[in-house]
Amino acid sequence: MTILVTGSTGMVSSEVLRELAGKAPVRALVRDRSRAPRIDGVEYVEGDLDRPSTLGPAFDGVTALWLLTPMGPLAPAQSGNAVWAARQAGVRHVVRLSAIGAAHDAPTRNGRLHALSDAELQNSGLDWTILRPSNFMQNLLFTLNGEELYGVFGERRVGGIDVRDIAAVAAEILIAPGRHAGKIYTLTGPESFTLHQAAAEISRTVGRPVRYVPQSTDETRDGLLRAGLDEWMAEALAEYRAAYGSGFGDFANDHVASILGRSPRSIGEFVRDHREHFAGA
Image (cartoon, rainbow, N blue to C red; front, top):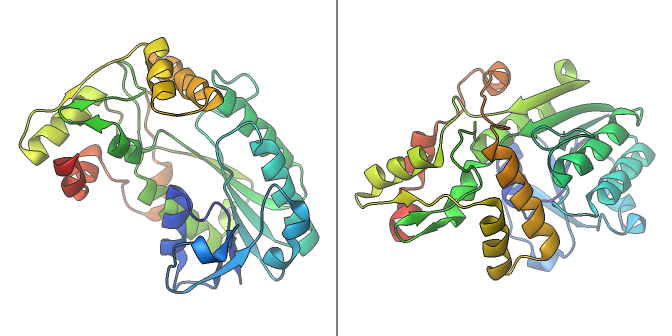
């Protein structure tokens, strides 16, 4: 068994690599090996999902693929290039990271793009599993500014999930995919929470006041543009603000527990694990 991981320098795939290292032969796809952070037990190979001609050597001998593409308008093409390379190489199983609520009528453009890629994989002739996670708890690490916490939940609750639990689920399926073939899992934390609750957890943990500052959809978009995001990304994230603000993500389920045999991490556990970061933010 050789497992290939795409998106390997990103937040989710880096955790997937850590979960897999030492448990199975694992290969990380990177554009430039000299600039990739190294994880012991991982083989690094060059290739670019935007350039199909570069993918052959990376996929050679691969039996299982972790398929993650960056959020953006080119994601369906990148996913399609990976699926085609997997078919050509004889890959047996693909585990794809999709998005919560991915559908052709999703309230976000990201969800609609993921639906296209999900459908292509489902009709590829390959065995597949699709993971559709809720909002990442790790996003909170980038939205605390002094005593003020920002985010895209509005005033509603969202069943956010720790990226480490997504990675653990991915690794479990990639190593033993049999019973997961043809399954779609929506991954959430143990309960939904508001960003007011998240701010209170941070405040208790670091011992200083932290408050959540709700923003409208327009304020969210404008703030992201001022922070340097391009127009497509800022508008796509603002769409999530509108969707989550309508209750789109207000649910939790047992999908993580059914795969791992344990509960996913709570928002309290996540904050305590990242105490040093929040204390210095």
